[in-house]
Image 1: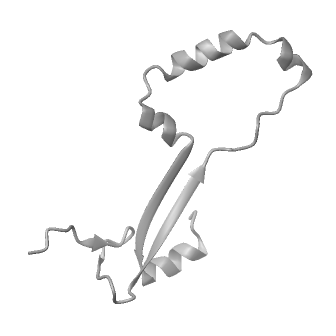
Image 2: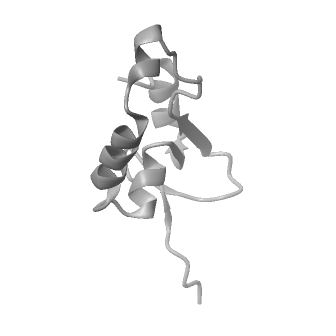
Image 3: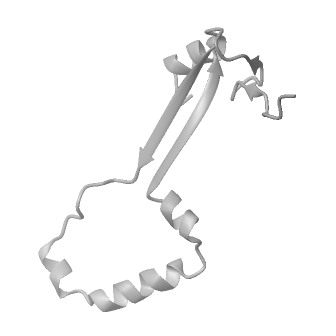
Length: 93
C-alpha cells in the first residue's frame, strides 16, 4: 500500500505520475536585495543604537521563520506539461 500523497500540478491539480515525462519540477529561489546598504554623509550622524532598538522591537513578535522568509525563500513546484508551457512564457502573470 502506497501511503505517499499523490503528486499534483501546482496550477491545475492534475494528478502527475513520475517517470512518464508528464511534468516539470520548477525551483524558485527568492533572495532579498543582497547589496550592501548605501550610506550618505548625513547617515554618519544618525543614532544607530536607537535604530537597532527600533528594529529589535519591530521583530519582537515575528517568528524566526517569518524573519527568514523576509530574506530568503525557496519553493519547488510541480507543473504538468500544459501548465508549464503557459507558465514559462509569463511566470509573473
